[in-house]
Image (cartoon, rainbow, N blue to C red; front, side):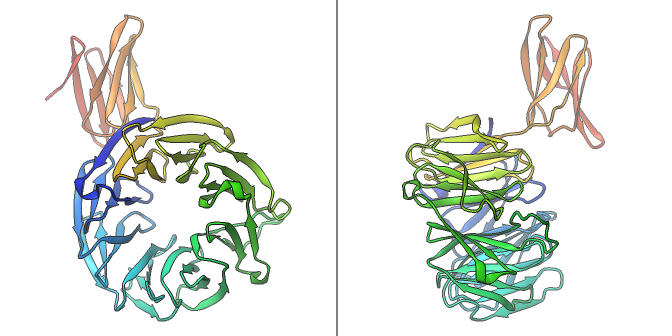
Length: 422
């Protein structure tokens, strides 16, 4: 893995960062610390814009296409919308009088769910500007939630209940939990026969000790999975593959379980790769890899063989330790935040792109870097910083050309020192 950039803003010092990659495209990353702003950077670490808020950012999410970033802030009843295509910010009045605590776009449509500290809910349709307020959805703060691909909305609250609503906000299921919920997710449990009902299972961590599986169509038979005490608390979990769940625990363990009804409760894999602690896990379906981090290092595991660690990154300067992990949808970039308020972005996948002329090769070695080498002639490799992320590379006797769409940039190779041709 290669470092692409590091973000270190004084306003973030000592704070745990809240950040989200732009969905689908991954061209932007939005970052918030303890100050009253959200800063948006491009994928090369250049600051693109800044959203000034009346209070600290308490939640944000990108819509399904990565076009609009929605943000909620302390001391405000407005929802702030940043349109990436025109770099413009607008705001909508939620109509709620209490502080907002949760925000999430639908996976499939223009619906935005906003929850409050008193358990109220707003569903906003970005296309029609219609607002549906739902008072008393919960009795305490809404803390977590997830949309299904069928636009069902599952919400968890400090009142230790789980609610499942339709896209109009009507409650269709509600159940009491044995503790506070966290990390709600919709997915499909493995079955012998494929169901046509889509994402029928809500999973959530309860009191950091139980992983609960709640079938929307069979609410009486919920499954509660507990784990060995020496694993510690559930830190995070992720669904992957054909109904598998990877669970990370606070004492450094991670475990894989299957949701196939015949295998429920069986640990298919268990590892103790981080000896004392574990802070975060992330999965990239595009790469078929998992990442886990603890203390000063991050490990990359192959999902097809979790025993195999393909990469380890140590960040020895981060004396307070690492915090959270987040991959772009295409798996190309991995962001690692730290407990002292810095953000490191690494390149984890690069398109194979290159060309040759005679015995000389030019190939992509980073997002904005092309390396020219000539092993046959014994020439030292030359790294050229280029203007754009190329989609093609061409090599000639004296030049390297990179380009995208209908534009090309030519770099002259004179005595092995590249210079841009004007």
